[in-house]
Length: 415
Image (cartoon, rainbow, N blue to C red; front, side, top):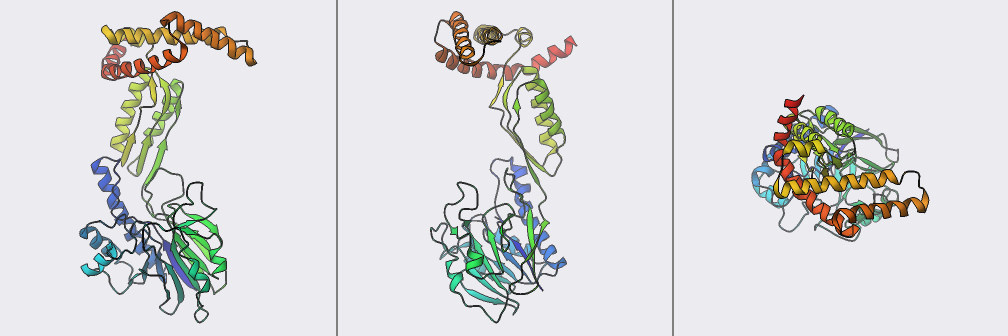
């Protein structure tokens, strides 16, 4: 039986720019740590080779230290590592691969697949490679597999990096195309692919392994490597996903409408731990007190999670009458708050008075009543008023953020 470990898209040297510096460094290290786990898995399962289907490095410009550390991370498994250049580390005339060779870190077990060729690996299987020689190409680099002769009835394995056409989601079928039926037309027992960062089965013999350490906020089943077993040439491969990733990347993007929505978001943030990387990006609206509670929960979660990135810009803060009174805001900010409160009340009254109307009648009544209320308050047209409201809301929001602490103290004293 032939046993292989299929992995891809390590992107060693990747430094998440959206994370805080200490978090970014930890996520950088995690990508090296997962290579050590892959080496341990390869040894534990006694595989015949490790297939790395492209994007080993995140960029050609990674430091010499990073190159040395990557090759050192593979030491726990001394069998063949078959390393394919992808779009991030293409086999250019002068590349990170040539630099690794000059540094003397490439040992005999590291096979750099820098050109398309047919190889026999330890007399156990035939390997057909399709490395990227430049970052992007618009022709299928696996096309030559179809005409490559077989070798002594050995299992026939393809190794490539690119986008399977007509199968991946819209917008993915761009550069570096791979025909969806390549495994069949090239008589492959297994086609090991990289580029898509999640584990994905294309057909019985064609798989994306995905990145072994999740690196983005997308539910694409990443953080795995694939253990592939072939009992004989022509037999269907047995493919098992092995969990390799450490960090869970979680997204919180609720639409906030009532206080219970804020409570649910805060509860979710309270469940984060040191193995979580989180993005908090709510939309909708809430009052000042709810916004203050959410800010406090975000700060607490930031200290608990491995990394937390937040974007609250789309969450609209709408002060209640009590908020406005408690802030004792005067001058321009006070006028904005009072004006905004009046407009909110006008819109609520317009909605209430339109209850019972339906169809076109409801729409026309609501539009007419809202227009009368808005014009009565400001003397302008509806669209113009909405633009003004948005501008004023942003100004009021800035002031409210500064005064939230004061409001908390006042509310606390009143309880």
